[in-house]
Amino acid sequence: MPLIDGRTDDLAEVARAARAWHVGAALQDIRRAAAFVHLTGRFEVPDHDPARLTESEWQGMRQEAGELEYAWQETYQALIEAAYAEPALRALYPFTSHWSLRFSTTTRPRLTVIGPCLTAGSDGTYGVGRGFITPDLGLFTTAHEAVALAVRRLPTGLGPTALGG
Image 1 (cartoon, rainbow, N blue to C red):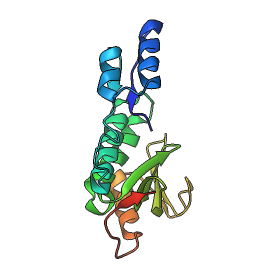
Image 2: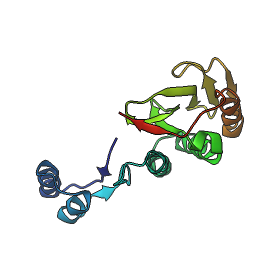
Image 3: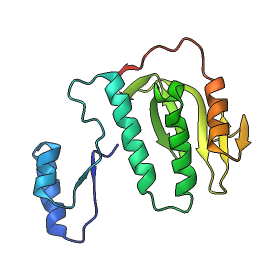
C-alpha cells in the first residue's frame, strides 16, 4: 500500500525522495526532501490501534477513489462511499484488488477475509459475490443495493477489528 505518491518530471526530485526513503527518513522528511511527494495518510497511526488503522485505510481508499483517472472512476468511487456509509462495513478493515472491495476482521499484514466481494464494473453495474470478482450473488444498478446485500451476507457477532500479525 502506498504511503506516499506523486508525480514529477524532475528525476533529481525522484532521486531525493528515493534517497530519503532508503536512509529511513520519516514520511514528513521525505515530503520536505521532494516537493512532489504527497502523503497518502495510510498507516500513520503511531500506536497501531486496529480501529484507527481501519479508519486510516478507509480514508486513504476514499481519497484514492476520488483521484483516479479511469473511465469507471465514478462507479468505483460510488461503491467505496456506499460501503463506507454502512456502519457494519465501515467497522471492518477494507482492502481492494482488481477493482474489487473486500473486508477483513484483521488489519494488514495478515488479513482475515470476511463477507462477500463487491465489484464496480466498467459498465456502471455493481456486483456481489462469494468469491473473488465473480458476482454470483447479484448484479445491481446502484452501489447502495450491492452494499445492502453485502451487509445482509455478513456473519453475525463480528467483534472489533484486530491487529493482523
